[in-house]
Amino acid sequence: MNTDKLTNTTVRKAIDALQSADSKAWFALFTADAILHDDGNKMNFRSFFEKALGHDRFTSIDKVENNGLDIYGHIHSDHWGDFKTYFKFQINSEGKINRLDIGQASY
Image (cartoon, helix red, strand yellow):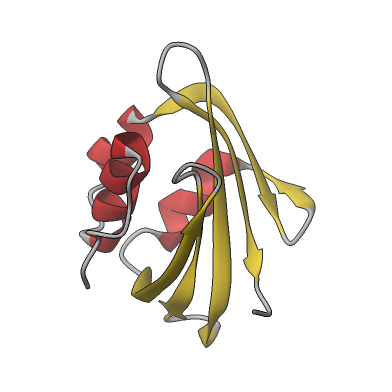
């Protein structure tokens, strides 16, 4: 899956880590107290992605907005199947991701 559409370097690194199930690289990009919302519901970031890495991956990236921080595309989840999704990243002044909002998208 091509990540050339991802214009924000940190977001590209995060999606590359997700795609390759590289938990060390993934978690290194986030603050220790990163916030995760899944379809508006606050989740435990670490435990959510410890389960998701290696089982969830983008199959396409369809659009990128908000200076490269919001991405929309199709994702495959071994647990939930295939669906459209969004990932919206917030990055702090130190360059670490401190919040990620994910969920099903309708575009």
